[in-house]
Length: 621
Image (cartoon, rainbow, N blue to C red; front, top):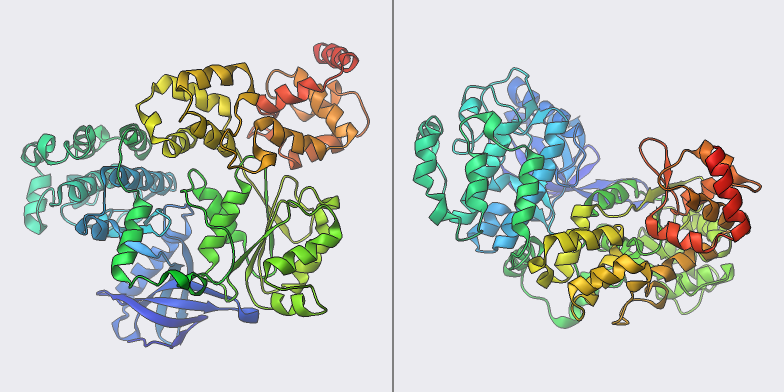
C-alpha cells in the first residue's frame, strides 16, 4: 500500500481519503516549478492489486474522463504509471456527498431540486459526449463548498452502444441496464431513484436481488412507492417527475435537458437552506468552530468577502481556473455590470488555500495614472511603501493577484502589468477590464450576458418574494435586463419597494429605470446608463461614430455590411476594438450584434447628418 509522504510521479501523498476493492484514493499535492503546487485527488491501483482487468478499468475511466469538460463533472487531469502504481489524478472536490447531506438532514426541498438541476446539466454533457455514466446515485454526487454538484466515479461508464459487461448499482439500474443494453435513459432512471432516496430516506426498490426483481416489474414497483405520500409532500410536483424518470420503457423517460427544465419550474417558491448552506453546516459539524479572531489564519490572502451565491457563471469559473498558471495573465473582459469583479472574488476565494501566498485583491478603480499601479499593489499586499526591492521580494512567493478595473488606465497599463507578471513569475494574475490588455502572454475570457434561465434564477434568488409573482411578468423583466447581473440585482432590490408590474412598466419605457436606490453599489454602477457612459469614455471619436452609425441595423449584421454602411476612416479597426470592449458581440454565424440598451444609448449620439447618410447607405446595401 502507498504511504503518507510517498511520491508517485509528480505527486506527494498527503492524506488517505478512502479505500476500495481496486486501490486507494489520496489527497495529494502536485509539485511544479518555482514552488507551484496544486491539490488533487489521486486514485491509485496499488502494485499488489494490479491485474489486467483492474488496469484496463482504470485506463478506461481515465479515457472517459478526458472526454468530459463540464463544471458539474469532476475533472480528470492525468493518467500515469510510476513505480508499479497506476494512477489517475483528478480534481479534488472538497465538500460532501448527497448521501451525507441527506443522512444529516441538511437537504431542504430547495437543495434537493438544486441538486437535481445541476446533475441534469452534467448528464447533458455526458450524453452529448456519447457516454453513459451507469452509476448515478447519491454517493457519486458530491457537493463542493460553493454548492456546486460534481458527478464523480466514471469507473463503469461506457460509450453509448459499445459492448460491455453489466455495471452499476442494483436499485438504481433499469431493466435494460441489467441486460447490458442501456443508453442515456438509464442515467435518468438512476437520477429518479436518487431523488426518491434523498427525499424519502429509503431505497426505492430495496437491495440486490429484491431491487433486480422490482425493476423487472416497474408497474407494481411504482405503485409500491406511493409517490403521492412519500415525496410529494416534501416537494409538490416532484412525485410525477420521479414517476416519469422511473418509467419502464426507456423512450418514455425525459431527457436530461427536459428533466432539468421540469425541475427548474419546481424550484420557484421553494425555501430552505441552499446546497452551499448544507455543505457549510457539514463542515461546521465536522470541524471545531474557530475563534472569531482567527480569520487571518483561515484566509492567507486579503480580498473582500462576497455574501451572496454566484449564479450562472460555473462554466466561466471553470474556464478561468484552468487558464490560471504560474506567470499567466488572464483577463476577464466584459461590459460594465456583467459581474467581472464578483467573479474574480469567487476565483480568489477558491484559490486562497491552494497557493502559498493566498489570494490578493487590488482595486485600481481610483488609479488614473500609470505610476499609481505599483503603489496600489504594494498597499494591497500590506507594504507601507514600494521601497526598492520590497515589492519584488513579496511577489516572489506564489500567490493569486487580482487586478480589478484597469480599463481607465492609459493603454490599460499593459506595460506595467507585463512587468508585474514578470516579477511575479510564480504567480497567476487575474485582471478585470472592459478591454483586453493586448499582452502576448494574456488569455482573454469574455463574460457574456447571463442566459434567460440564469437571469430568472438570479432575480428570484436575490428577492425570493418574486417566486410568487406572475411568470409572464418576470420573463418580460428578464428580457429587458439583457442578462446583466448588475441590472438584475438592482431590479431585485427595487422590487422590494416597488410593485413588480410598475418595475416592468418602467423598464419597458427606458433602460435608465434600473437605478440603485439603496446606494449600496459603487457610484459608477448606479444605473445602466452609467456603465455605458464608462464604456463610451474609452472610445476614440472614430469608434464612437462607428458604433452610433451601426444603430441603423435592426438586428445582426455581417462585418462587410458594417464597412459598407459606416462612413469614416479605420472602420475595420474600430469594429475590432468595439468587439474587444464587448460593445459588439459576434454570434456563432459570424454576425455582429449589440445589446438593445447599447443600441439605444449609441443612437442618442448619432448626429442628424450621420444618421441620414448611414440610413441611405444601409438602404443601398
